[in-house]
Image 1 (cartoon, rainbow, N blue to C red):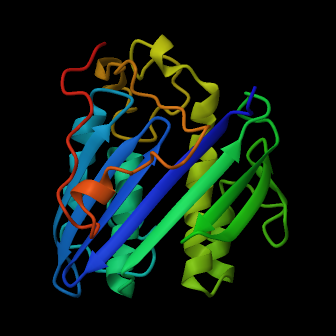
Image 2: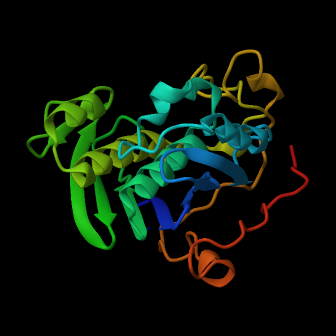
Length: 264
């Protein structure tokens, strides 16, 4: 029996005046495309293409609140521009990456993250591996929300490691890898959950208040879209694979949502 593996893939592409970022993992598939004038975001669109909850589809569109934001090399600067608790976390995060790479002029960047789960328990010890453009960029052993190894990350919690990295890592690629890895480590806990057993986002409640859908006044109306979780344990190859057909340059149209009429 193979060890279950949480996988996440992020792809960012840029061209003159535009950028796009796509993300896929077990429970999520989102895309964000933006236009800019060289100094600020002039237009942006977010799409929820495979989502855990019905209202996530609307939440992805809230990245439009980033219109007017100055371009910056910091993918986490979006959290200073508008409140991330009233966004879709995943669309918001990749919007930040799209903005950062538009600023830096990176033609193409891809992150691949693997987190094996020998024990299907969210706080169990596990090792995250992050590849950047196919090369090893980061590897953390994490237990109960704390980084165990290697130095210089050992001893930091997932809650504080991004702030530490912002102050101590001078290379923007190294800092960005921490931002991406921290989120993936946290979200990888979805591997231990059966989301289809829940009626709505209000059941469980461990993320209450952290995003637009999980606001207390909204979560009970965010119905589960059954069958929308994938298992990429055998291979990462299927993740974002449709982009090679519909958007070989990375900047083409968004794919259509996988489920138009949710089963709840």
